[in-house]
Amino acid sequence: MTTLQDAAPPPGARTTGSRTTGSRASAALRLAGRRLAWALPLVVVISLAVFALAAVSPTDAAASFLGARDEFAGAAARQGVEGLLGDRHWLASWWEWVVGAPGGDLGWSTSVRADVGAVVAARLPWTLLLMVLGLALAAVLGVVLALVAALRPHGVLARVLAGGLWALSAVPSFLVATTLMAVLSLGLGWLPAGGLTDPGAPVTAAQVGRHLVLPVLAVALSQLPWIALHLHRATTDQLRTTSTEAARLRGVPERRVLARHVLPGAAVPTLAIAGARLPEVVAGSVLVEQVFGWPGLGQGLVQAALAQDFALLAAATVLLTGVALLGGLLADLALVRIDPRTDPDAL
Amino acid sequence: MRSDPYAPARPAIRPRPVGVITAARPRALPAGRVVAAAGLVVLVLYALLVPVLVPVDLDRVDYATGPTPPSLAHPFGTDLAGRDLLVRGAHGLRVSLVAALAGATGAVVLGYLVGAACALVGGRLDRWGMRVVDGVNAVPHLLLGIVVAAALRGSLLTIVLVVAATHWTQTARLVRAELLALGTRDFYRAAVSLGLTRRQVLRHHAAPRLAAQLAVALGLLVPHAVWHESTLTFLGLGLPPHQPSLGALLDLGQQALLSGAWWTLAAPAGLLVAVTLCLAGCLAGRTEDHHG
Image (cartoon, rainbow over all chains, first blue to last red; front, side, top):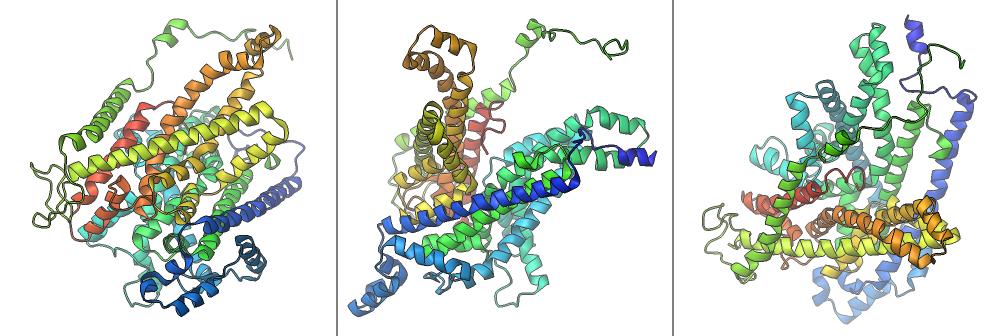
């Protein structure tokens, strides 16, 4: 009985016959290669666009570098700054940026006054930590809510959930973040309102963990609606399939039916959408970082934009786009792994 | 195999659904749609009428009043500078809706032009056009918006440009797919074989179908554009603070939150969410996976 069950293909699966595991793995590799080959020209175009926009920007680069000190800077100091910022064609600056980028030389950030490579290296891990934890929490919450709602389609929870999630999807992520901060931090005082650690405190796991709760919750809540709603629809469909019915009739325990027959099938359409939604996850985390003062790349991006620091802006934009593209690739690879029907060559 | 007596009989023609039942089926959520439409009307009237009925100098501050919680005199309360939030909210809604409508219209027009050009010219232009669409879609829209707003700082025109530049891709895809699908339809081929010119065919067969699609696309883009305006302004990259858009009010509200004036955030936040929900509710049922 158990062997039969284990040998049974996942619900709704068609056996692919001639395709062996080896050729499937190489097809997945081809998929990864194709995506990377597509990312390269995209990075070139994005960086070109940032440099071109910097060139057409009507604001005075020297003035934005000097900031409040602009009015006190003498002619000599001003000339020095202008010489430092360079008066070259934007294509020349772009070319220098491209040549230096592979070696880690991304230019000089005028807002942080540090090497862009160092700024990015210090900030990117915090962004990734926030995004991965936020998405993981959203996925766990989404699975639980979708299962509960699908198993009791006419229950109170299912109805409240549908309306609540729909309303939540209309709330921008910066409002979710501010509301969480207002209630849990400023109102109830349970959690710190922002930053990576308490002022002056060393970066320890306990400190970061406490400060991480609210940003992660904000990212998770702002991504929850689409995850939960798609999972709910897919779970409802999957519960009605004959294969689920057959598994129950064979006496497979309900828990195993849900874990092995329903959820993998329901995850497929959600994963297929996840790849396309990742740019929005990145955008959402930029806003959450800004609200909570989380020292990630998103906050760096906003600061760079406010200070017109185009070197950092270019690096942050390219890297965050890269995160979105890489995340999309991972989602598609997971799809290939879970669902034998997907053709890696068609993705 | 064919003589298998247990095989389910397959009718040659798919059974047609009984007309009466399908016709009598109500459209999705009619009550919800009515509520949403009514809400939208109320919001638009509020944005249009309140600034006219209560002419207040927006720049005048009243520190003697200061921040007061919602009361009968000030239903939404007053902000840190003692300015009435009911009036400022109406002005903000006005600015945001104008920016959003202009941006969404720009996006739909641009998308329509690109999509139609791709479908009608075809060939190399189509391939490259769709590649550009994929490229724009791959970059998070907010990032593009931040980059553009960083260079061309703070004006209504910048916001409109940003929204149009980042959101035309959906419409372009839609128009292209619709036109390509049209080419395979029998009535289209009949029209062509009757000797109608391309222009006539497009006017008679393509235009009405596209018009309906574009209207839905515009409706779906407006809440997204409101979101974009308020987000960019909230980050300090959009409209200047003296122009009370919803984003600017939210930004001030977040700062006022630290001094306990929660209503300064609640008023614009409530308006923003209400507008988004009402717009989405009006189009409920058509919005499925249309736009993220």
